[in-house]
Length: 274
Image (cartoon, rainbow, N blue to C red; front, side, top):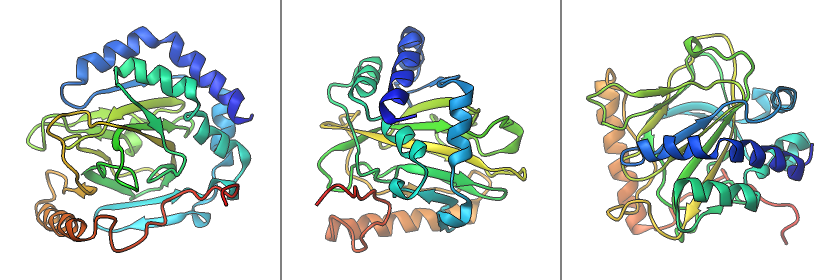
């Protein structure tokens, strides 16, 4: 299926549930706003997207004490349905509908897929609690929404690999959003929207199609520029101290070098751009 056909399906399914999605968001927006919609696409289409995922060895490995996962962002290297699936969420109708659900004044997709694209996680992999970089690559717009579409058939919550949000910090239990097959989860990103992916404990692969949306203004009036910052899980006391120091160091570097000292490779380069 091409991008337009997929966008038609995504738009119609979200429109169908618009009222309930708005309620979900309104009930959570004062902390970490989010909503989820199941059965986003026909099962056969969602399975086709899953089957098209590249093997892990054809993706880039991100492995450190912060995270351990495979990513892919240069979408023209992979099967066309994957690029269509990514950019279906950037269709103006889809963006406009989500903008209305969340009552955000301005909302823009990211054609560069800065930190977006495909992700794949296997047994033992994880994403520690973190807040996302506050801006897009040029620091002109604020990152405000994270869109995560899960396509691993028969995924069981017991496998791990579930999205976790920490609306009350790390002294209280996290809220778990299962990475259920054919589920779209959308959550806000701001200075206190701590979230993570629980370690995968099953011999299975968790696959996800992700996008970010940006805005002219931050979601919260007290938001300030910040780099992606990680923490340890509540039981990881030593790792937490190391990661807090790491975040302070990287934040300090960005004050001196606003665009960083290393050019990120987590960007889509459109082959049609000169």
